[in-house]
Image (cartoon, rainbow, N blue to C red; front, side):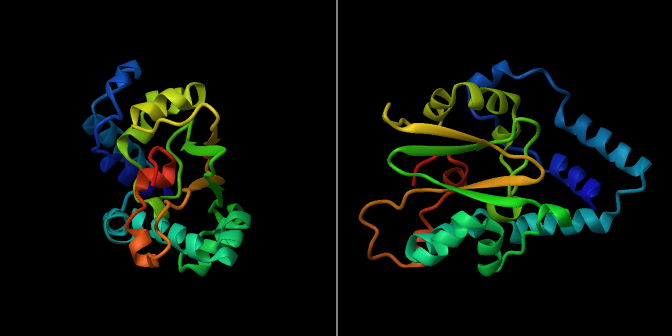
Length: 218
């Protein structure tokens, strides 16, 4: 199943790179050739079955969407007890919200949630590949997978964020969190001022996928 999902992940890449600075990225084969190569390798291992690809695609289209993570954020903004649980044990908090995230021992990952404050802004990257909580944030965007984003974010996060339109005060510290197969991150953005009268559904609509990654403000 994991190998079949890898094929699906390659096959569904289609977003533009993050900016003109992606010219720094090392040349790669066209996506069609990479998909064909991955599929050939999976077929050689007997890992590709059409029903698995269909299932993964259906999950991505219908179930793995950024609104899942946005709903978790909205709940944390309105429920102090849930916020505390979310920051202490992301897996337990996601489960309480209706999403099962298996721990690393069971082939899953530890969900770690990091909160933005006036003093600290968090941003997520995966320097080795493109790991992040797909079921909560939806399929990762093309720029998240790019070599430029993965390499530059850890070296010059303030410059990268500026390219996304996020300009932070010099007094705000930027924390970069490197996802792995066993630990994946979700940013808890600061609740916008003037939203005290909004309900969970209205708050959920304010949160974007980039806000959950840390490359946008809410």
